Image (tube, rainbow, N blue to C red; front, side, top):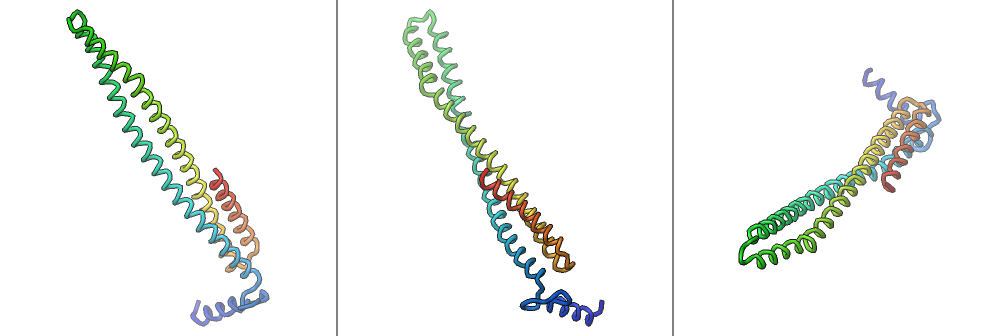
Length: 191
């Protein structure tokens, strides 16, 4: 296509050509497509923002679960050492003149395991489960927001092509795909 033809075609499109030009030289289809693209772009911005926030939440919850797991391991090590020490005190103290002292120390260690360390284990395990659940929920939200972004981008492309191809069904298809995207966005927001 020569430059003159391109210029002529551009003028033809911007004036509305044979399709009933409206204000600003745009026909009705072009105006509707432009509005649809603007609305889709707004939803796309929201979906992208929410997807990024969901990723941050996944990372935060995973980090907290890992930190809590490390604390659980440390507490488990304390429990193992205290339990081993209690057994050693009972064995070493058996038949020894200081058996009463050794047994008392062993019982104190066992009481510490029961009253102090075991409840900490339960709290830490519950916290890990909570972090993992929150992480899984945020990961599901992220997937929904990403799918919403894809659908909205596809809707924008179809609406844009409808202007060039002068096909209303492309605009309708773009709006339909974008509507699915908005639905996915809503599903992610309320998940």
